Length: 196
Image 1 (tube, helix red, strand yellow):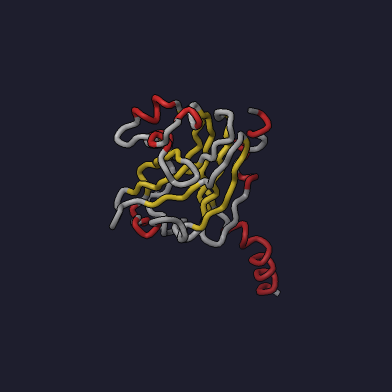
Image 2 (cartoon, one colour):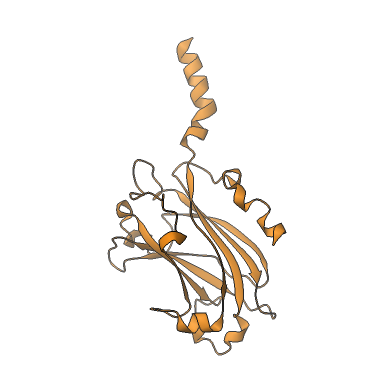
């Protein structure tokens, strides 16, 4: 009987016990042409570092909780952008404390043309250069790079006024291996798009 109850408990609650996620960052910012052209060290970059990153993020993303082989839930709320429906995207790059080869890796929002909400779940083992990060050493900062739909940095394009100014709220939620993103665990995002 005890084994049956234990099995029932594990079947019922194991998914909840296993489920684990944390907000890596949640930033709202306006990005102007001057911001993009004067960004240092790289143009078209918005840098998320210091206290903009969750100070309680793990040092080791592989153990005891495996985020490296989990997913990331990307949430982009486009609050303002120039008229004209210019396809725009962001590369969102993980900058590790210790890298190898190129030393970083990036996910992407995919192109959007209007204000609104973009959400997607991305495997942490499928994005560009994800193996160039030594995940056991953690992440020190994130670089958000504004581009067109052909992966060209916005400051290099002939008419930057199609991209700037723009205002966005971007949030990354890291989800552990075997778990599924649960919006209810991020109540500060509930109804955000409606309230802006």
